[in-house]
Amino acid sequence: MWVTAGTSLVLLIVMFLRGVTLPCAWGGIRHLVQFDGHSLLDYNTWGFASANILYTYFFGFGIYTTLGSFSHFRHSFLRDVLAVSAASFAMEILSAMAVWSVLGYLMCAMGIPMEEATSTGAYLIYGTLPQALCKTSQPMLWSALFFLMMFLLAISSFIVLVQVLVAIVSTGLRRWCRKRWLLVLAVCGPGFCISLVYCSEKGGEWLSLVDGFAAIVTPLVVCLLEVIIFVYIYGAGRLARDVEMLSNTFVSYYCYFTWIATVPLVLLLILASHLLMMIRSSMYFLAISTTLAIPIFSLFYVFRSVFCKMLQGAATPWGPKAPSDRAAWERFCAERPVRRRFFHRRF
View (tube, rainbow, N blue to C red):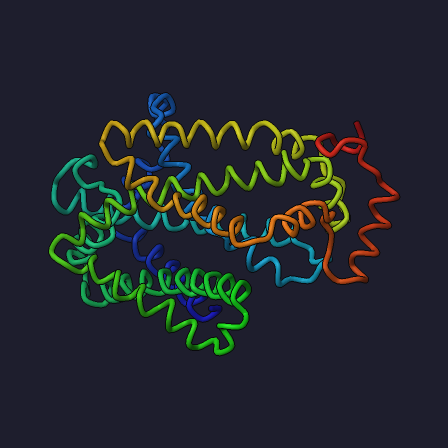
């Protein structure tokens, strides 16, 4: 993981240095930083921005909740949040400047306006950028480095997603998953076979459908459900107290009001805008197809359990599993009581 991520970062820096040294590169960068106030009034701008945030940080894919459960109980997760946010922001700026510098060079080399040189999605990666790199000196070298960088970026994300899926399955089916390599093979094998459809003649259309519809709504729904469970069901006050215990840092009122108001409202607006756009394009069924797994699995979990055990599990208070961690958590809760689970303990 460190090899793939580190190598892709080095290659990105190399591509950035090569891009900014091309002729007319700074013209493309100026087009990147040019302010357009009318775009802020277009809801598609905010929809694309939300999708970019979800893909960049992998919100709603279960990565943080699954892999975070393997950390130590008093792990300093705030430090991880700051490090991941800063690194991701730097990578976004670096990659954007690298791409737009190459697009600026393509604009001058072909004598076309910037609007015709720009593109998005898969065509930007497999069409526009390789076309621009072919017009540079040593085009084979730069094209090979570019596709190697894209492969390493994709494989590092794929490794994490497979680890999350394997961890989820192995946790729920311990008796059937004693050999980890068989489980990894069972996950990767069908996934590889299904992904062959993207290599067919209509693969680009399938990729656009899945990427533009099915892969956007589900993370938004999952994020919204997580907010409802942790903030409204478990309680924002309890959550703030637990964060304070784990990080030894007082949770500000800004974070508290962000949890209870800003985040759910923004998620609802973005989800509604995406659903309205998909209903107009008659692709709403594809958009909600992957989301249907959530109620199906919930019903399966309910009907396979005995009703008395369900009530017993619902009445059991939440807490750390390890006895020592649970004792420390109970002492902390006794010292800093929350009068109402929804309210901050300082209220």
